Length: 169
Image (cartoon, rainbow, N blue to C red; front, side, top):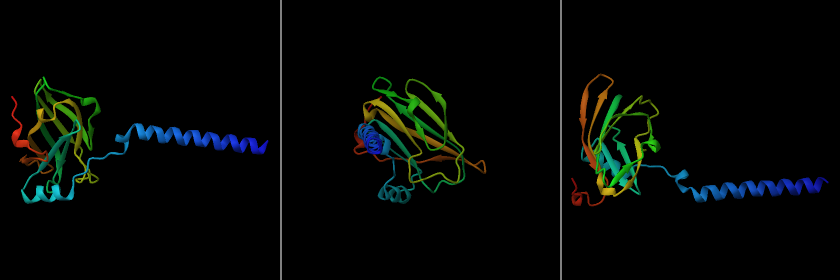
């Protein structure tokens, strides 16, 4: 009887392990993270860029330079061609609190707040899933309100390849 119970337990553990392994193989995004490469971070600093973004695999990733400290609120404007792009705001992955400040058919303004000491500048400020043509979604402008209530416009840099060839609108 003891041997039967042991065999059943081994079988159940094997089934559970197989199901878990299958789940992770079917959902590889579970292990993905948007991390700013060291080369891109150095280029941001060298070119005095405050924000960088890339849109690949239907995800808009936005990174903030670690030169921007003591953030109270940060606003990001995203322009997109609503005929070619559908934004999925329900699946946005912000690193801090996020709310929609304004939205039209071609413009989305997001407000980020409650930046804490644990904010990781090496990871994306947010990931925004979308469907449609990747060149049809861009960061247009951004500003930050610092803890001393100073307001600063941020410079933006695209990490995408061939951004000069993006002509729409």
